[in-house]
Length: 198
Image (cartoon, rainbow, N blue to C red; front, side, top):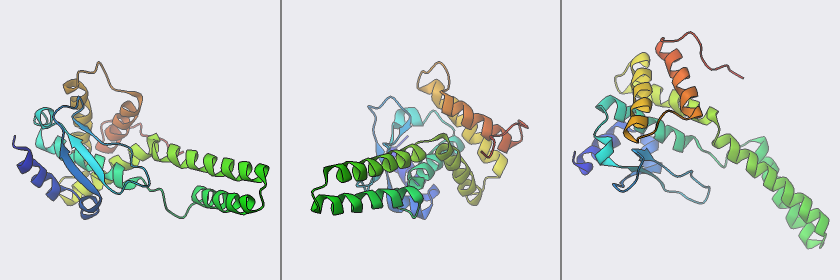
């Protein structure tokens, strides 16, 4: 598989928002088939690293859905959006500035602690199982615009998760992958049990 040809094909599969914010990079030395670092707020570029030697072992629909999941997860991480926790971070920072002008050490510590707690909560939300499940749902919706049916897309993503574990030499799926697989089985109509809403 020629990496440049596959990258061009994958760029066509990606949504326009993904093309603007993510970049596909060949990384033959990595052990994972596809990987991306958690996007921090000061990093504008969100690279997706693919080991094309391992990538070619997947079927084309599996590759499409894996990429769409990764793009959906990366574009779904939002540090700056109107939310309670972002408001708390801002309030903590403003409070810290006010308290620093008054040289109030306790006030600075309280404001800094408030900001730190809110930032940790934002971090956890963006790294939660819900963010993975939301990325799966978004990937399936994008795949439907690319000619897949909902159940086909869910089946391809399900088989891709299981195949990647085998390619990477893992003995089994991790907890998050098991939850994702159960949810994808429900979407594909293979299982009556899906993830609860709460």
